Image (cartoon, rainbow, N blue to C red; front, side):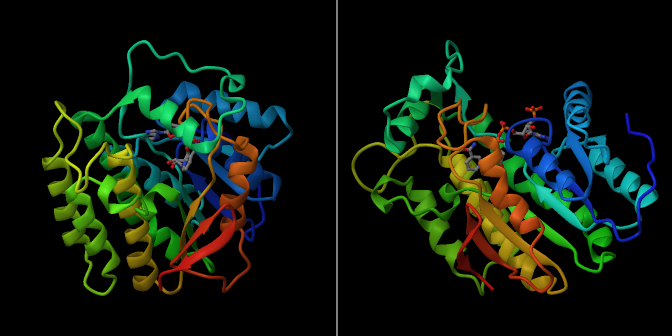
Length: 317
Ligand SMILES: NC(=O)c1ccc[n+]([C@@H]2O[C@H](COP(=O)([O-])OP(=O)(O)OC[C@H]3O[C@@H](n4cnc5c(N)ncnc54)[C@H](OP(=O)(O)O)[C@@H]3O)[C@@H](O)[C@H]2O)c1
């Protein structure tokens, strides 16, 4: 269900945020609306999305509407594009935030309270997460479909509207895991080759990327951990890392192809959400800040870059 039309100035910027019903996405919606942006909060589940909009309205933020979006469903994406075209005729900001972990939680895991992680450092927290999840082919496939192909298909459908804006922006919420900086000996062999190819900025194409992702998923075996190039266990979260690496590469390609847009990706930090099973160090409000900063960069700002917690780390273009 969509909200009532409210009158706005033609200069009001319009933003859409995928996975806006909770966590970092919900906070991005709140902070954008707080900055005078007209926000379309999207969620795959209508009840969860409507409840999130109501929560923001209760804070006095009125220029927010809900629209359903399942990022892996082409007809859902088409409905969103048609809605935006008829309601706004343009789009100024697209925040691709929706994601899954690319793994499964162990059956008996209950998300603990934040106090569970008191006194643990980052490595201990990540180790706890790794020990409470398992990497399966099905979850890996879903992670790649949602995190990479979901981002790509939503972006492609909304590109004409973004190009109708005088200052269109795309912010892809990525992760430091997507930098693939894990030592090669802890990586599955297939993704050492993937890293080499993704780093080859000038030869990489979307077709090549599809083949690399197919090869990665094809090599995934539920019965054992992926084979590493060195001795020892993998550092975990393989599918998530690969999907976010693909998002970073796609950001780079898109920025080159559309110089009129600002296209960037951002690591929000390690944030306490359902996704991290509350193990993060930052609040969702803190995590969302860097995402919103990129969405609201002044005209002519950087494009094709990777940011972490609001700071420029790598410029790819
Ligand atoms: N939390 C961290 O420490 C951390 C660190 C680095 C990067 N990130 C990135 O930050 C972003 C937000 O993460 P978060 O921590 O806020 O996670 P979260 O609380 O689990 O929220 C994820 C959101 O994505 C939605 N979603 C998942 N699959 C979807 C699909 N197929 N179609 C549409 N929506 C879908 C979820 O909807 P449902 O509620 O319906 O499941 C939810 O709204 C993600 O891109 C994540 O990779 C997070």
